[in-house]
Image (tube, rainbow, N blue to C red; front, side, top):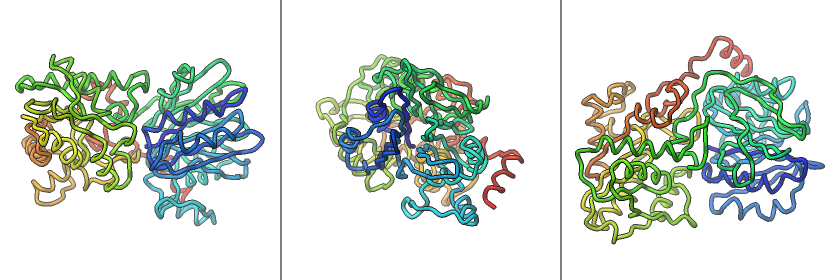
Length: 482
């Protein structure tokens, strides 16, 4: 997923903007971008796949001036995008995933609307959102019509002479938080961007809420909705440990996940507890606290040189990062029975080849793998994370067991069923672990601490509330595409 950030100040905002965007670097690996509005728009976009955001933008930010600006760390599209619309020029950044891009693009072509940007042969999603918004009578009307038209999710920031408009997607899959410091305001995907810049959390945007930030303060332009389906994976993997969503801290949730895993492991004996860095670390700390076994670091991540192996778009790049970033410590590994806590098993190839294999090669006696969430069964429809069902470890196991791909996987979702147990056993053998036990969905929900109905669990159970569109929403969507 992408991370977005905006800042408004009564003075120059560029330092706050620069570091605030940088605090979202864990969310994307492809592009970074900033735009600041002073006397005019000053926009910069760079590819950050081979370098850090700060190093790419340090010289740029020294020559940018303005009292309001927005930026993004993007996992796919170049942004911010600029559009000179009928209600004036604006820049926009987005976070989310649009499922019906091709249909929306075709509808805009029929309206004689063209696109200038492409992303790997397809339309730039942020430009698409900008063009949809431009169909409205004004920015607020345009955002609401865009929400009606899209399938998937989109949270966004729009910068123009009014200030910064911030809108959270209608189901609240992706978060937005408002921070305040004296007369300055920021809006961020991740609350970890606030403390070191001196900002305090003012509020979390509600699903569908639209607010305006400017020198006069914060104004609600559209009230939010009561329903919510925030992405559970934020706490399990995606989010930064210091971040808070809906009042719930990421690190705390991961520790609770680890404790829950340990409570189910009374029948195995281990010598040390470890986590696959970085996102597996807190899960392992929780496991160690509950099991009373020592937490140690048999695999060290070379943080200065390599980021997450999950976010790059190509499998080749993911494998390369996974190979290079984890360095084994033989003295800690040799002869020990090791529990390895991981945030999740997505494809399984990296865990097998670049984690478990390194432990075996260094002389581990046993390797017990404990993912902090259930088997991933469905590719995400709301953020750019898992790309297809075919690549998921659980689906590969089902295909091997059934001899073919099957549509109805409901029996494999039941942790008490024989098919579920056979699936887990197949993955256990495939990744070459001594044992494999997944977190249950109930324990994961309890660890997060929010009501189940307020969490998106689609990756694990395939339940998608936003697919149950109202008749009004369907009609609005069809009208936009005609």
